[in-house]
Length: 133
Picture 1: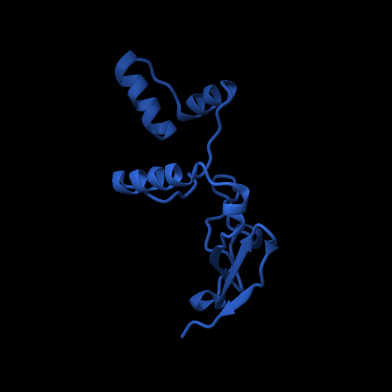
Picture 2 (picture 1 turned 90 degrees about the vertical axis):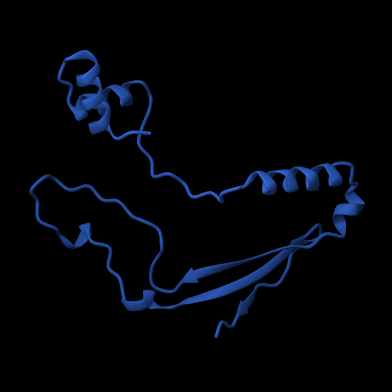
């Protein structure tokens, strides 16, 4: 996907007519499109896709009793002070930054904790704090 500025330049090159990036954005919004930050997804190689499909095919005929014996587990990192994610704000051109425009941070992220838990057919398991050294 190109930026509105790149699209405007391409349109000018192709048609000989000057089009602003704002016009491109406005036209896209009228068409029901809007800008979002791209979500992060794991990159799957062809090998991983084949392995996932193979796993699905091997388990497609499992019964509920088979699935009752499965434990699904996961871990997560939770930042104590702030999120790792990007945040957005609106500001007028030429306006100086105000406190609400800034994402405050602390050195080294303020620390974090690692948690692990599991779920089964019977419900949610205990949540455990993982000590990372």
